[in-house]
Length: 97
Image 1 (tube, rainbow, N blue to C red):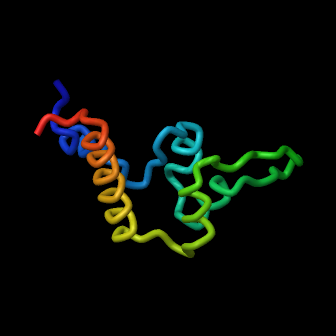
Image 2 (image 1 turned 45 degrees about the vertical axis):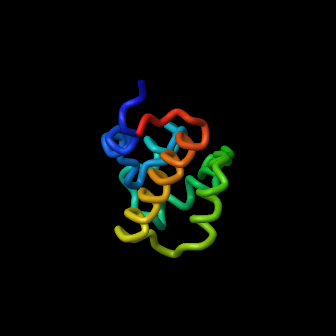
C-alpha cells in the first residue's frame, strides 16, 4: 500500500530546496537566489580551492536562465515536481487510486 503521493510530497514541500543534494541545501539554504547561483554553478574560494557545482541539470538550467527565482517560480517548480512524481508512480503502477 502506498499513501496518496501528494500528501507525502506536501509534507516534504521542496519550496527552494534541492532534492537529493544535501550539501547544496545546507550551503545555499539561507542565501538569496543570486548568491545560490554561485553554489549551483561551482566556484573557486579565496584560498584557490575548487568547489564543484551541482550535477543536477535542472539547477544548471535555472542558474543560467533566471536572474531571480521568485515565489511564483518556486510554487510552479514545486507543482511540477509533485506532478512529475505522481505521474512516475502512475506509470510504474505504484499508485493506488
